[in-house]
View 1 (tube, rainbow, N blue to C red):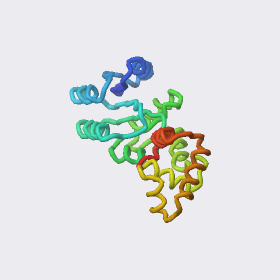
View 2: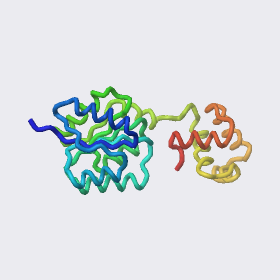
View 3: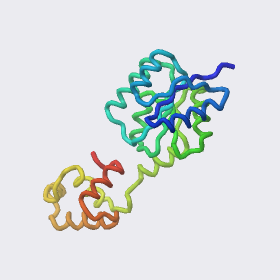
View 4: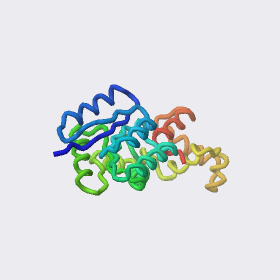
Length: 209
């Protein structure tokens, strides 16, 4: 039985080594490329076709360059399966990756066997795969209110989007004191003490529009 060829990308050599060992310990896989960057990965798979590409994503957002790289990979090697390893993810990002042609998304918090099982599944079946922990994370993120009321969340999103309190008051047809109270209550519930902390919270939890 022929082994499925694998390319792995991660910016840290130690992680690359661990992932490579995980696959090479299984007779059904053969890692032929280990890459530290997207450009290395693209060059490698352009020269040598692989059955499977495993990409460990460090951040929870998709920027334009990353989307472009995925598109390039998939257009260059149409039948190659791409598996994404990630910590946290929003439903919107899952849908974007699926639309791009990514084959599977697996949480880094899963047992290592889950990654191998996901790879087996997508190589055998032509379907999109999402691990259970990713499903749990995306469902929770989609429902997350962080203990805020709908009004408080709405006000916070407007503020972190760049609106002043006065502008928010005008947009919502409310008094400045009412908007200030909503902001104060929201920050108290979130345990935040400054606008800088609020912006950091918004960035980490994907509240920025």
